[in-house]
Length: 285
Image (cartoon, rainbow, N blue to C red; front, side, top):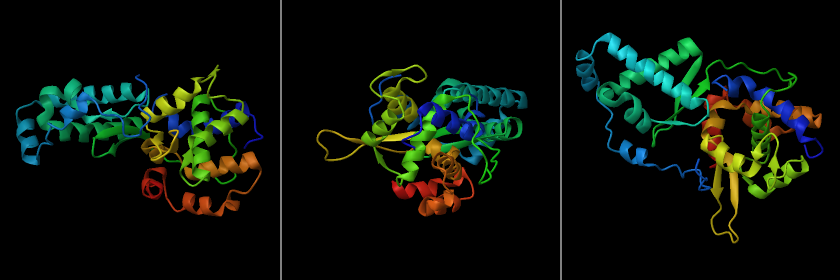
């Protein structure tokens, strides 16, 4: 990949992921920790108790079907708007800003919203963080990519940049020190220390935007001086990105059969879909 110009690599990479990454509808400085997303809303979420089945039933009896449908529609709209920036949606935000007085039937509203996303939009509402109750939308139409499928030209270079980074992480075993990423990008004519015409502040795009979107984890390495960080796949990447497609991409860049990377090939084809890749990826964590 080092000999490949970024304007080619990125334009090749992004279309590979375009359907999976853009079909779901195309800040403060990061604390440079994948778990540094604590907010007052999350503290408030700790006071929210998931209603029981009987509580939901009693709540529904006090409301008309039209009221429940209207509130469900508001939740769907809120999630769609948030998803345009690929930022995970917190349950605390949903309850505080949308559900409000309907919190006693929250499980029913979410169940109906999930059904709408699947049946109307072909999307899946997934809880990626059960502890903090955070949701994302992923493409529910998982279309396998043939081994020899060509990588077409993309319309979203930023997703191509992300795909290149995810490819490096995957090919290097799931964990990569940040200096390796910066060095590879420099060889591909993208300097993280300079503003780029497509990506703006490259370093901030990668360590802030992609991290907040949960495509990447950016984690401080303990006991390093000066302080060093490493990249891993984020929860959204585990849900949305196909490792088999990464091997197709790498094979085309290097003009090699994807099977020549035997370890990565086994990992990529040991899972049936991106949404089941969390178990595999968790081995790196």
